[in-house]
Image (cartoon, rainbow, N blue to C red; front, side, top):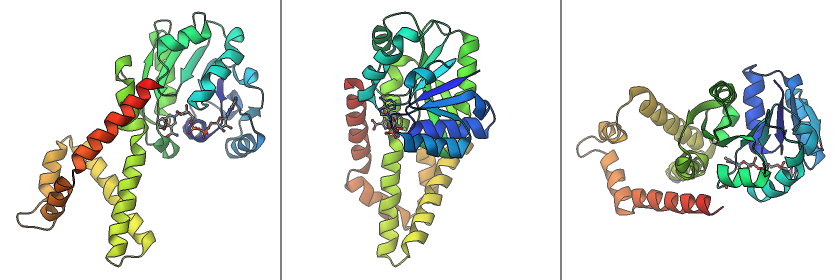
Length: 263
Ligand SMILES: NC(=O)C1=CN([C@@H]2O[C@H](COP(=O)(O)OP(=O)(O)OC[C@H]3O[C@@H](n4cnc5c(N)ncnc54)[C@H](O)[C@@H]3O)[C@@H](O)[C@H]2O)C=CC1
Ligand SMILES: O=C(O)[C@@H]1CCC=N1
């Protein structure tokens, strides 16, 4: 099975890294294309994959990942659509491009897997949602799932959920990094050295996320376990409530979902 990646930036590197490390596909079977050469030289040195500046070469693979920015999608689809056959699978990772819009852009029946990954894929802790068009068989879906699982977890969702996914896992690492940065600022203000503060904040977030996933307990219950009566935590929680922490997160996510829909 040959894989092609068109656009060799953050997300393509994250996915290639996981796929090569987990040995799902050999580096020799992977080709990446990019407009500029330095990104390709870096990927070739890091993973031992084939590289090219010609997108049409990468588009010859059995499974072709479109890893360019959304505004470049129309240009790349136009460039490769004539050569695409109904044996190949095209995987998209950009927000807002519905299966219907993609089918129209290709202008002929093609197998499509629409996904929304995230950058924690770089450390094999990605969360990817995917949905397929009806031309993709169950066996092919399983094949793609194996690839997506190589850089974290993946789940199939109904297409209407893809915009919500963009907000809850595609973009959310940015909000979490803001939270970690702010927590580290708080600790620095209290006298902790910056590097140590970042380490403590990040490990607390990692551990909290693991608690949610591994205990299966409701996040509210886990929060209650931290809040001792008349203790320190409830003081912080009260300030977060007063400042509209939850409402800010909800509003931020609504803005993100709206933008994803409008792409
Ligand atoms: N960065 C993120 O957190 C996430 C990004 N995505 C989606 O992934 C896609 C890629 O995003 P990133 O990897 O962050 O962007 P990036 O900017 O790191 O990578 C895009 C790459 O495409 C190359 N490129 C530009 N025009 C090209 C062309 N015509 N032909 C071939 N290569 C070309 C660029 O040189 C660059 O290396 C976007 O559609 C984005 O919406 C999805 C989920 C998360
Ligand atoms: O900001 C963006 O548009 C992309 C999609 C999800 C994460 N980054």
